[in-house]
Image (cartoon, rainbow, N blue to C red; front, top):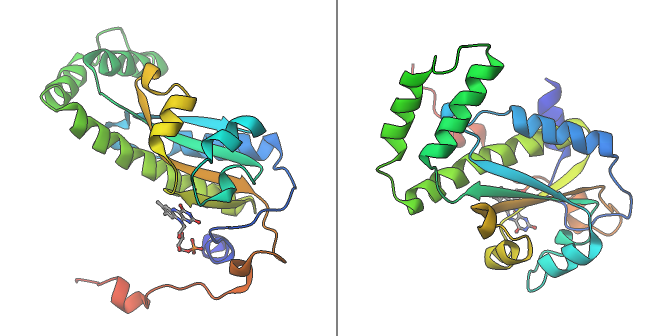
Length: 209
Ligand SMILES: Cc1cc2nc3c(=O)[nH]c(=O)nc-3n(C[C@H](O)[C@H](O)[C@H](O)COP(=O)(O)O)c2cc1C
């Protein structure tokens, strides 16, 4: 299975070279994230792809992760702060259009989703959006590895700063998790040559027959 080889090849890069990732590869990684699963299919997060050096310098302030600015691209997974009725209605309408259904043809689905989400607090919505964003993060890691693009998933950033600098609150979003993309500087990254550390499979997983 090629995927296993790709996952063995990848690691969370600490030091990137100056080489840029082509826009074509970035577009394919973004497409893979867009194609990944999300609960109810609602895709309750948005993705920002940032190259602007000054912006990234600012976003990295106070973080131990130099990769925020010292890499080719920075992905910001930004979860929705609230799952509003309007968001659900728009989503269901999009589904009707993309599946060539008549308007209102998915009213039962719309009502079910609204009944499920409307009693929830914004905090519950935020936690749920973050979980979905992390599924996107996992897919991005796999997609990058397949393209032999290096990546670093990161929680080591200041979410408030990201919200402020990127104006996320005004868009009803918040920074959930981030990822840098680029190419490893193998000579200067101590992690490039160390053994990957994982639990033995038998300890990690249990088969119940
Ligand atoms: C959600 C998440 C957050 C992470 N945050 C950081 C981070 O802020 N900085 C960093 O250098 N690595 C970060 N990592 C990378 C992990 O440390 C790394 O994936 C783990 O040690 C396993 O090593 P490997 O990915 O190189 O196989 C993060 C990984 C994940 C999945």
